[in-house]
Amino acid sequence: NIYPGGHLSLLYGSQTGTSEAFCNQIQEQEREHGFKIRVIDLEEITCSEDVQSIILDPKYCDPLTKRTKMALVVATYGEGDPTDNALNFYNILKVKLGIHTDEMDGEADTHFFDAVDYMVFGLGNRQYEHFNSVAKFIDSALEKLSATRIAQLGIGDDDNDLEGDFETWKENTFWKTLKSTYLKHGTSLLIEKNKHGNISKPELPFSVKYHPSLEGRPLIMPDKVERDQILNSSRYYFNSHDCVMNLCRELRTPEDGGSTLHMEFDVSKLEKKYYTADNLAILPMNNNESVELIAEALEFNLDAVFSLVPSVNASSDKFQHSFPTPCTVRDYLSRYCDLISPPRRSELKKLASYATDPTDRNALTRMSSKEGKKEYADKMVAGHVGIVDIVSELCTSISMSLDEFVALCPRLQPRYYTISSSSSVHPDSIHITVSILSGIRRDSTDFTGVCTGHLASIRPGDNCRVFVRDSSFRLPTDSTKPVIMIGPGTGIAPMRALLQERAHQKIEMGKEVGPNVLYFGCKNSKQDFIYADELEEFQRNGTLNSLYVAFSREQKKKVYVQHLLEQNSSKTWNMIDKLGASIFICGGTKMGHDVVQVLSRIAMEVGGMTEDEAKTYYDQLHTQGRFVQELWS
Image (cartoon, rainbow, N blue to C red):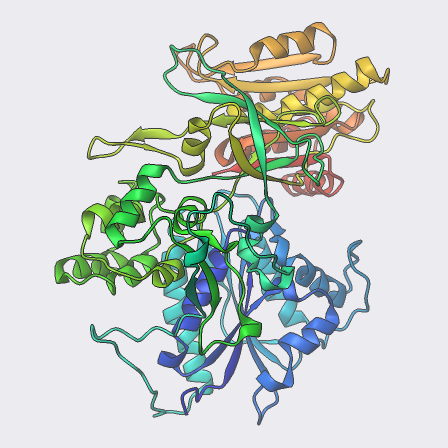
């Protein structure tokens, strides 16, 4: 029996594809460990009936005990929210626990999962206040709904070593628990080895089909694909649109040395209209040099046109598309492959099996191991080494077919920018504010961020692939209510949008608009005080009532926005508690943490609350949409 442990359902909640990739890694090891793994996208679970028909399908339960084995790998997104694909499952758990939710109706049922054995691994970032809160909720909820926890909650921290945390949980908790619980002592497993002594990988679920007749055509239209035939983590490739970038200007002065760009995109043809301070997702493209380097190294024909189709031994109804095809190899490498970011250690391990030179193979295998974690961090991460560098320069003996590369290479992820324009003032134009990431590698070559490098390279009139996503920034429906905005650096983006909207309400619509207070921070008033002229105009026309700017490098002791906020404790508390102000924060997680600490102290020192009361108070404001943070690490 290849799978003496029987079936296990592995569910993932993923925003960027990491949880999905982790689940696929587990599935690749199913034969090695003796369990048949069924990976389930939580997007498939839309209601209670789906839980019964998909997760608890009798075909996948133990034939003797009638119990279902289940594991979940789930990320926490934003400020303690479930990922988009896990939202319905999250709400199902709430309903079954008897917790009211506006998104879903249903009856409480504390025995809903009474025939389930489960364990949970969570992905989060310790810099965020609600660290791994979704995994913690799911782990607790399942137990309350009568499921049996067979292993303690696993915690992954992206601020440290998320992949290492997962590897440790996978080997020391996941597989060990399954084997000790469900395999009889002495059970032998059928393990296939390849020529290098590594465990054989499962067959690819797809193969490459070439279309010689389409080569050389100026326009190749991809096939129309139904939504349920698209991988959840690749949906944005299918629902994004080309928009023209029609304006780009530098916001910093030449003395600064860095670059922050103001960019405007024509979105008049987008089906989904944006709201003030929503998010604009940018789908970056690799530069031609990287594309040609990797194609030359792997001997790919850039003009070849191909499609992905189900492999001979794969079930066609299980096949899902990773990106639109047919397309040229050049388009595939340009639009869908992350060639520049350092690959995960698990991806290095796979790359090693394609290296024909033992030196290359051993180096990649070593860095992919737990023992090689420091070397990986030093050489790959700190060195800004991507797959293109590995294949074309460092380990040139790597050889693989296109379908093998498609299966291995990570996908380019969209980057989200908070929109810095008002949809009332600029209904057909979206503005974003972009800090360009660039630097020098240890070998003295230049590097730029994947997305900011792409944005810095395009010129007015060029197309850029984008889509709009909702954000939590929403002005109060009562325009007379005050607004407190805290956004240093590019965190000013949504604040600029909100000020444009408030000015429109006041000047164009004739509404009474409450006080607007902005805290902004930068290094120097003469170098990176971005949008200074616009803020001056907002003050002149009466929209911006108070502007507090922290110039961190203009005095001996550094001053940041949280310091200025604390100086205005009494005024701030009066606006929040007496006048019903909304608080909007945007910027880095460290800044956000410091600002929240100051707000908590204000509630305690001016409002007379205890620490727990202050936390409950701001949690209630968050629930009401009056306390919104959009932070990045």
